[in-house]
Length: 287
Image (cartoon, rainbow, N blue to C red; front, side, top):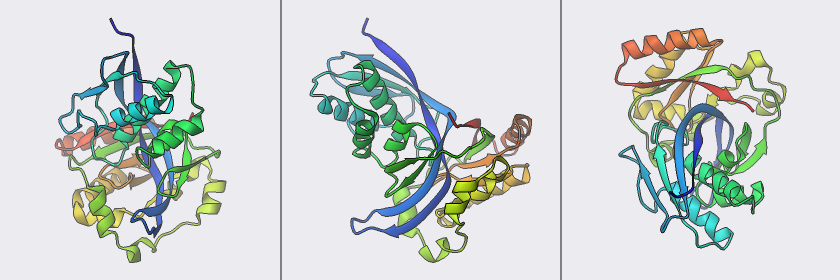
């Protein structure tokens, strides 16, 4: 039997996301505060396989070299001058194309797992640099702690201020959004109406004030593309969330709740009203 390891690959949410400009290369500069949550995929990695391959129990996840987990393995082996291979099976729980970073998380999980298996040949900053070659969010997942990201999301700075581990309820309206379409339809005139003073807010946030930073430039555009996202946000607020926001470029919306009982009550209510939606209870991972 081949040696293997089972690892968890966590989702993320964006507590703040501001688009600050368009670059000459066609990408956009942004600033975002990201945090992992307990919702996760499970990856089973087999080592010393004849070829690098991936399989997944979700039909929309590619099982070829375009999969980010495969790209991560290839980047890692190239970096350490190895001809080794692995096989990865992804038990997918994070919704696909939902603004929760599932594919990027899988890539980072493979990078971290391989680095551990090979007894840490690469420092974390080198792993993060490899991750940036795969996708803008991958360095954050390699880092694995609350962080402020700038550039196209690939420049990571530790967020040292306290974030409470509040329970959250997530709604995925079962319709993915195309990130490219959201960017293409982004109206910068609409995105300038509700900016917070992020320097002061990010510096002085207190536990009871976490909801005051919630902001996402993509929401107005996403709401026009799929009004169910706005409906999901409104429902979370109506069911007692202290604040609610779409994560990333959508289409998942999360609500922050004061305690687990309130979160469970909201979860049950939403499942009863909207059985077509995917609904999850999770928690911020602050450690």
